[in-house]
Image (cartoon, rainbow, N blue to C red; front, top):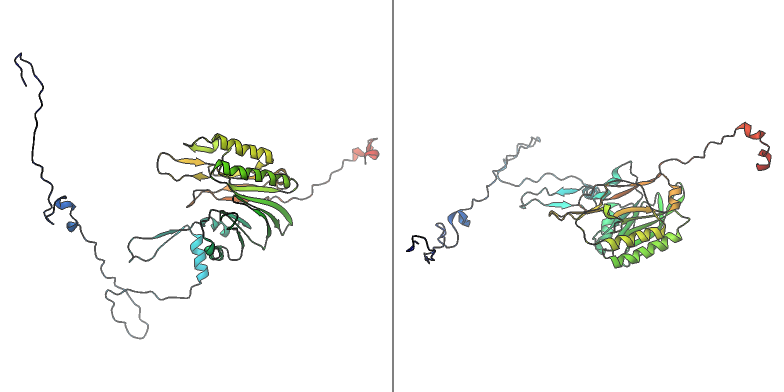
Length: 353
């Protein structure tokens, strides 16, 4: 306001006015406007009746159908086959449309579709964290691979590790089970070769994984003269190149893991495919990728199967990448013997031979 000196002086003026809440003109209640009233929401459109054509069958034309549910004729179905086809797919959508929202059922065992690939003759399988109750295990086994043999230890392993085998090709002798591993001998029928396989599922905590590291060091020492394969989810990385995103302090975990590998004398098996094998599936900026899954071998494996490798595949419903071991496909024949005649003229030839 202007003052006596020709300037302006700030002042505070209190203003009061009447506040009237919104009132709906449809339901005559306070708190919302007519555009937000539930009485004014459009109802769902009613589907018109579907005209169905029924071909003549020689018994006269059937009466017309008006607003009746049409049930297609049933036919003989191989229930076992249908269930296997359902489980081998990534997802199956419900065909019922009168139940409201469409239902999508995901198959957590989708990785088993590799069995249909002729180029990947799977004979041994390891599954981790199946989340299947003990009373349902037999049913799942009969649906997935009914001709295979399964081993599930709901006691010591806590249902964390499953193994399955096709006994037409391999024999498996489970030697020891723990909460983080299953250690077994695998013998192929043709050719007759025995290897040692340790399926690993490392614990989430660093202190708990140290028990696993000690077990791997002991098992590797016992298998110096036998091909050894150690693989699956170690829940640890070897260096920072195997991490992408924001992660906590993992230096102690990396040091423990690398110390175990060095003490056990195991080596990384050649790999192809996805570098990061785990993703936290976060839609926020805190995305995190890690290489938690791998396969390791000993020197005896390297000497006996020099061309073996494994592939990390693209994950689907799981947050981990499936891994497939590619066998040593090179046929090992005896090398050609070559003798140069000039060696016979050497004065030391007879003595050395």
